Length: 330
Image 1: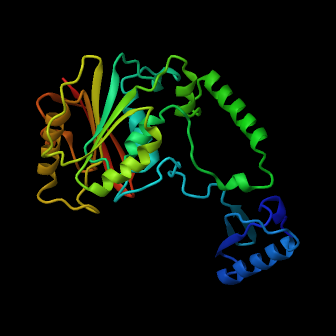
Image 2: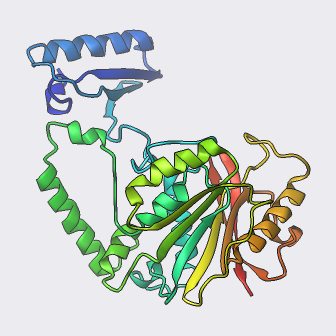
Image 3: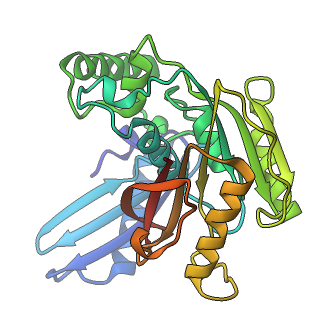
């Protein structure tokens, strides 16, 4: 009998999902019922404690049975820092990756230095369509290796927090010392004593008052650590920002509608070109990055004359093929 008590915590429930291929044991519902019966029999004398049910996958392939227990819990792109959400939000992990990409562009290939942007200027990050403020949250925690969530494996009886944290730290330190590509960007960033978070101020816009309230709620823990402005306004109509000081740079990072889940009027090309012009008028950014449908080409989009195309990065956002186009000031 499978030793469930070694993997499922005292009092926890298990939710079984079964699959079968090339086996005489082929009725999924019956496989799941059998697993439930065996689980209850093995754990019947345990004292119940309120814990989240763990997902268990039972896969039968011919004569082999594989039991997999979910170690993550909630899907991994949910990092636990964003309490409130909005329509068509950007995933936290994608937001973080784009910020690293913008910061590290043109860095040398050294494993430690490539995650560090040496800039004498403090950066004001501007999001003209801020939604839930995800870019700001990720920028604020850049390099801190912060996680505000729990993981399913932390419920396992085999898990010992202090011991396992020590082992993880030792492995991370070894990878950093060796300059390995397997070290996480956050760990490499934290390892650089010369690093400071370059983002000093956040300015967000959204025409939807609900989105403004959502961003304010998400950014509330950051008050006092960063200067924050959440403005209800339309990027195409709002008054320009005041002139920036010589020791401050403005970057724009935006995830505008793709014309699918959030509809826009008129051709996408016209909309994006108008957005570029509005962002230049509003902020005069030194660097600007926009997430657009994969079909968007920098050569076919008219950018402000003050900008030049710098680089692109293709990925998927919510299953939609997209491209991040980055422009820099001439």
